[in-house]
Every structure is written in structure tokens, then in C-alpha cells.
Image (cartoon, rainbow, N blue to C red; front, side):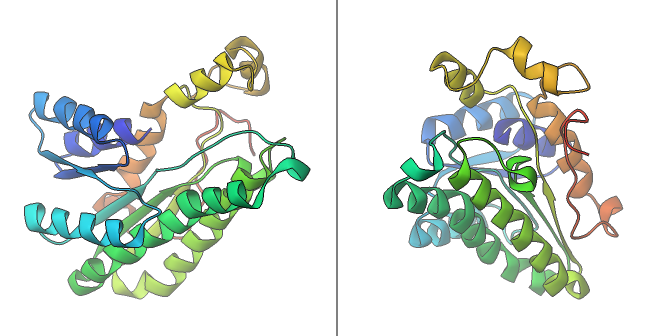
Length: 234
């Protein structure tokens, strides 16, 4: 999803900084953007590390100037029965999914406040809206992302900044296919039975919504939960 969103925002004419704990993945996204004529830079960042986030945003400022748009999509996901979740596992999910989103939003907001304009889009999850079996840790973090995004929207609306969240349902991605291979998720034909649209979502589906939310045209859309789920969550 992060790669698709980055490519779409570059196609919209934005200069894009691709942050990822996996430097190779970030470089891959940048290469795709540049091959299409866009402008992008890769920045290796562990979003759960406060100093790394601060340093990463400073790199972006050095290259592109103040931050105007932020889309947060870094996350980890997995399956553990609730009573088997260790405190270490719980804290790791919180650190990446929720604290990582907080650190990035906090790092970008100062530039947006100074400019009197900004767009923040967080990628949450349908699991944060309705829960998910064996994903108590993941669901809790994504529910937190939804609530935090709404609070940012309330706090900064009069500063010209919008904050919205996009909770996808089941998106075809390397993470999904890996979980299927490990037997943690059923085959695609079974997953699509729960989706009225009859197919898995694609990164491009999420990117299209982000494209609008990051635009000037979305200035009156704020604090909203805009699902990309094929009708699976209504």
C-alpha cells in the first residue's frame, strides 16, 4: 500500500519522501517513481524510534523543504490468540503501529502549522473498527490510530490542516500472501466470500482515496474514517 500511495502522490505532482525500515523497499518505490518522471527520495527510518523519526524528517526538509503532506502506512500484523499475546509482542505492535504513527504526525505538524496548510492521512484497518480474530494487539493499535486521527483533526482544523484515516479491509499485498503461505489466512477465494465486491482490494484502491484526501479539493473533509473495503464493512 505504501508503495502504491507513494507512486500515486508522485503522479499527482508531489515530491515524495519514501520512509521505510527496509531501505531496499524504499529505494524500489523511489526507482518506480523516478522512472515515471517523478521526484522522490528514499529515507530509511524505523518509525518506532523517536530519534530516527526526527532525523528522517530533517533529511526530508533538507531535500524538499517543509513537510506539507503526510501519509502513515508503516505497520506490522500477525495472529496470536489473545491469552497467548506476550507483553513484549503487545508493546512491539504498539511501538510500530500506534506510537510510530504518533511520532510521524507530531514530526510533520510543526511545518504544517507554520504554513497554515497540511494534509495527514493515516492508514488504519477494518480490524480497528470491528476487531479481528487472533489480532487483539493489531486491532487495538489500529483502533488507536483511528481515535488519534480524529483528535488531530479536532486540534488542527482551524490551522488549515486536515487529518483523515483510511481503514482497508483485505488488500492484496506481500504481507497478505506471506500470511497465506504460512496458513494464517485462508486462500484468496475464501477471503473474497466476505467481500461484497467479490475481489481483494489493491494498493491502487487505497492510493486513489489518499490522492483525493491529500488534495486542495479535500479541504472540507476532516476527521473522517473512509473505508476501502469493497463493502465488507458498512
